[in-house]
Amino acid sequence: MIVKEIMKTDLKTVLPSATIYDAVRIMKTHNLRHLPVVNESFHLLGIISDRDLRDEGVDVFQMEDNNELQNAVSKVMSTNLITGTPLDFIEEAAALLYEFKIGCLPIVLNKKLVGIITGTDILNTFVQITGSHKPSSRIEIRIPNIPGILCPITYVFQRRRLNIISILLYPAEDEKHDRLVIRVQAMNTDAIVKELKEEGFDVIWPETL
Image: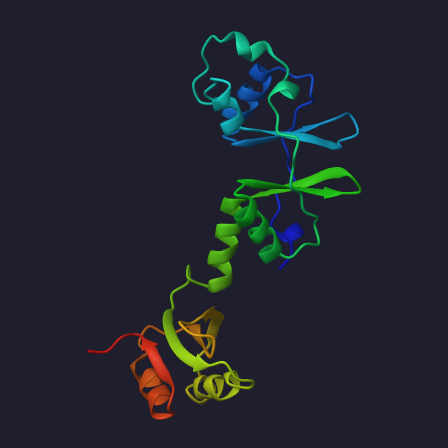
């Protein structure tokens, strides 16, 4: 999945000459935590965040008399920006948000702002990718890190005619193993778990007493 599939394109923006009051009003009206600052050609110049405004003593959700509100947003906007492109992979965008501890990623094409994604967008996408929002069950298997290991495992599901919703691979406690998480479209997994164990696979979830 790539960024252009999930980015917001119905953007609210301000010019650098807009006042902080204007920015606060837009953010409050549209329940935004990040507001891009662009020029007349829609080139990205900066970002106003609710954190930037709090640093200036302004509460986005509490419109109070404050002389700072009449200052231009160019005085408080962040300009050292991390950006992405529409063709970036979602996991690359998520890594940028994580690495730089930022709440949003402006998406730029040919120097123009074309979209924006937030941590919430990434979280929603993760839920969809994993299928955890669908009626399903989770099976976790500790597997050796060797080529071809997935084939015999998925064959067990094929024999049982069980539909696999998602497959994820996590690092295990050592470099020689991984944790394979399979979400399957079934509510009772007793039979498939029993068969996996009989085939010699180390099923670690669901746990059995």
